[in-house]
Length: 282
Figure 1 (tube, rainbow, N blue to C red):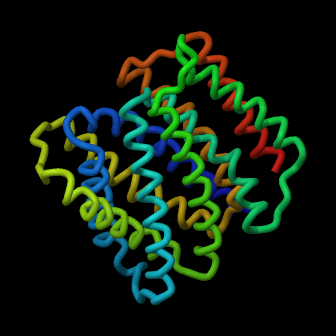
Figure 2: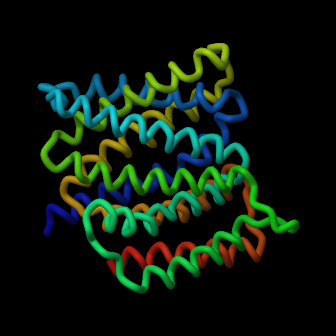
Figure 3: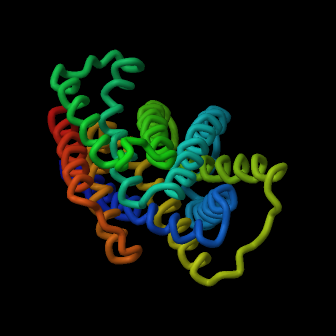
């Protein structure tokens, strides 16, 4: 019990860093493109992790390489949709929408683990839809592309959590995590090469934000998540991650001066209640 409590604390720390992600990404987007940010972010995370965790990574099994490739591809799409989504919506909106992954986790568990969700989840889904509409619809009753991409990201991220839970059971979670960083960095460089000219931003704010994003919000936070998923259930992981929008909202308010309207506060409240309710029920 004490061992699990330790991992709960670790995941809470990781969630604070995850909440910081949206604000830092928003800052980086002022100076660079989506693919550049993802490439640099995961390359730095890969190198840092490799330097400090090399003794815990090797030996590497062929199976772990194959699993990390699958996780890399999935995480690549998670971050493409998230990074582009953040560009076209607020950091606060993005965090609330992406936190909905905890709502989708029971459905993916139903598909892959044959764990049928409780009936209450369907009621929560209705509340969630109302919350999304209040948070994201503008005066013309239209969704913004950034909000839609963040919802897609949420679906992909919930799938990533379920797959990660399966892969870490009989494999080294640190190895999977570090190889995953390298895979995402490589994919980003390969995709951006034909469509974007490779440039190094010279702005100081960009590099400070990117270093925090790479070291703390990626290398540290995702390794913590990978290791914790070997000890904690995906549902409990999802519950702790549901606190992410609270931290993102705080960072967005103080760093980016982001504000929500009354309608958006109501929507955000409904989403937060839905996410926490599903996690506690499960």
